[in-house]
Length: 382
Image (cartoon, one colour):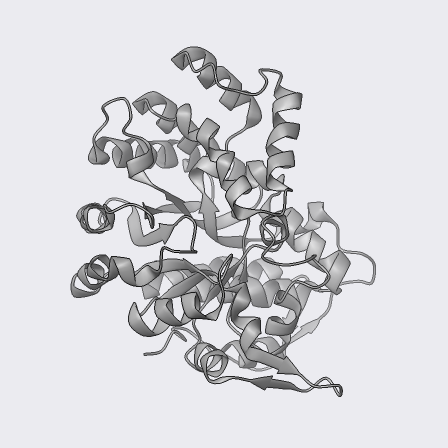
């Protein structure tokens, strides 16, 4: 098995030098370059005003506040608790206002609009159909509403946006969701996922769903190594054969750095790096959920230096108060990343997308590389 579908990450990075003029890289500059997003939850990215308006339209009375600013602050407060369980509780409100077809379509449309405005040229946005059927919608109606919204919101923009269908790991509907993903894969669904609390809900519980996707020649990612350690990653990779790892930050538990700064990788870390398993890292969210102690000590710094297939993502834009541009800007400020780093991480993400190879190559050669040309120069002929 190999995940290095386009070019080798380390070679790509070594082939670039930073030609940008000196000076700090601003979030506005980052917003203008093409970016790729692989890990973003639809129900974690609503506009606060939309939450208030949809609650009013649907008769939902459970919001902690109907003041847009106060509600936005409340969501971020719940996200910053340092507990994944507490973090996940905030979703009860966003999910509650996403039970009607038009509400779901609106949220999906606004998601696409917001990502396009942030300079994202390719995105895979995930959602769990089983969370949106409390008022009688079928799984197919939920998926149709999301895809309609994506098409409307991305129309006339450079954004190509696709869906990942998520099954909740503490429930028993993963095979149904896997079948749904295959049924809709020619209409905008590019893969399957499981999410939810990791502890006590190992990915092997859903082995039949993963095997179904495999038999159908499909793709899937697995949330692993966020709130739980190496066993979760090992099961996701070696038992479930995940194409990508959602977060995967705890892979650092299998890496030892000696006093001289030399990293010694264990067998699992070596395997994940060797076969280029993409890591969907979400730095700000990882700090909020307690998966990383701080941005400064986030494993992305070490893993990027060791040339793991690292990607940068938002996870939940509402709860964490972030955009993809702000995530990169944070890494620039804290880890000293430059334009070549941003480009390298963006290419990693595009190589790791569940889009067909020719479409990935088109985006890399005709959109992403030209977009970074004013800032970085390729020294080697490709």
